[in-house]
Image 1 (cartoon, rainbow, N blue to C red):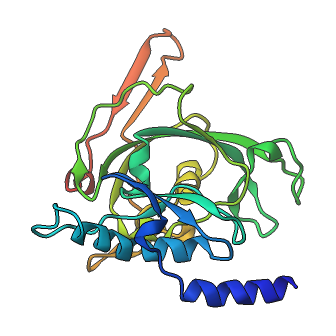
Image 2: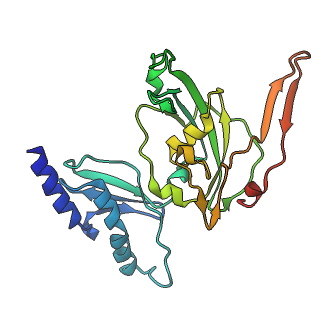
Image 3: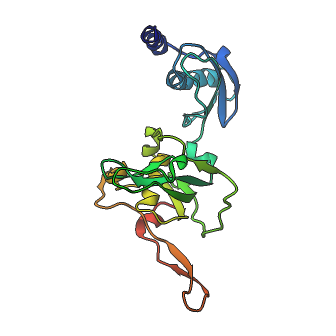
Length: 256
């Protein structure tokens, strides 16, 4: 029965198109639609540009060229669940400027480091190791050159905390964007920042080990673009606070 339902949904989804009557609300940042039963979310998302074009044509604001927005699912409904779906019109990373991600860290049975669910911390792994806690804070500085470089600031851990509960669903669209972030590792696990960037769907350029692209806009990268901007600590003898900073590499300054 489930196979028959899936086949029927695939056929229905391939032919599906939103109409203006399906639109519940829309503004410059998002659109809310009424998803029908038996249609996959991706099919709804794929049909949004056409209904947006119809809305623009029927409005008084149709003069001139209107740039097509970046569309991303803000929520998901199961195939057979109907109702409200929200699609954002901005890059998904713009919904947060700062975020903290908490997860587990350990080696898989194949020996590779990976992100585990936060609830797995303390669990034994093959080989005798255990899953350890791992936390990184991120601050988005620019997306596709839109933004500005900021001096490091304090991060409020009481706000925008993402706790890893399951395997990430990587957004292929994120790999088309050039995103500059500042990371604040709260623990010192192996490949911590690289792993958390991969989990968030923003793998580091050149980091082929963790899904980063090795070629970008005609340039081949022999190493990943990750820079230790600063390091702060208390002097081990005097107890005085110390802050060390390294000059920014060229690839950072070219992005802002």
